Amino acid sequence: MINFLINLICLMPHKLALYFGGFLGRIFWLLSWKKVDVCESRCVKALGTGITNARKIILNSYINISRSAIEFIRLEKLMPNIKNLVEFSPESIKVLRDAQARNKGVILMIAHLDNWEIAGARTTLEGFKLTPIYTPQKNYIENFIMSKRTQTAGMNMIKDKGRDMRKIFKTLKENGIIIILQDLDARSDGVITNFFNMPASTHEGIIKLYKKFGSPIVPALFYRDEKDFTKHHIIINEVLSDKFKPDDDIKTCLDTCNKIIESWIKKFPDQWLWLLDKWEYAARKNLK
Image (cartoon, rainbow, N blue to C red; front, side, top):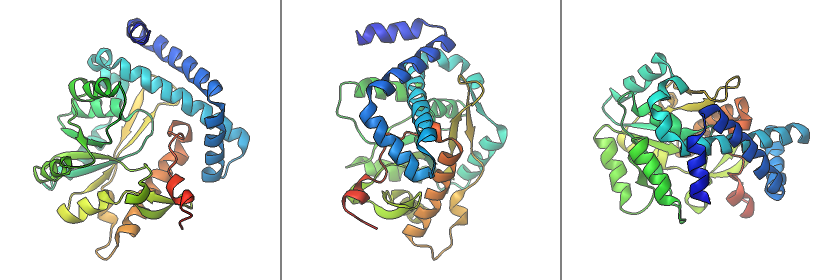
């Protein structure tokens, strides 16, 4: 059944497939009412918005998730036309090239907004070799996901644990670009910071790598066009670590990173993955 659905999605015209994705998103939203209620509550607390607006944001977030999944399934078919589907301006490309020209490697900081995998595939077409750091999934679709990311999108994946940590060091020493999804709950491994004025456990690895190797931290915003849902944009306009002061501690640097991600979510709230509970560990442990 799953293979039949995947084949059907691949046979559809692209825009029709995304309309179908939007339909599936609405179905999942209706069927997941318990999770939806939690997400709405999370949205109200984070953004300080009303429940009516939060309900609309979460519905659109589900639609975006489903459309992103459709795009991921169709990635091979999209690659020949991906430059037209994903805008990556010369100005943004220059910022990334200039950061890499420092010859200390680059740490690309992203979040679970829009579709980071299709944006990664677009970025590799400009000659950048991207190495996302990921957490392995214990499910039957792991191989399917990894083949799309590596063989189709051209990214070199590195696990976030064990011996693969040495590969991260090696990548930066060789002036490579690693990608870190910085909006995950770090649980017991993180530093307690403020995220939307609520305590959250945040991964400190991004700052430790910056301090160890001097690798510039470059925020990359990906978002789906609000007028044409088939199109995407990549915005890279600064080297965030250049704002850090020599005496800034890890928590201060992480707060700066969090502020950037917060600004992205405020601008495109219906494109963030509200199913992620960034605050779960801190709340459960009653940390401040």
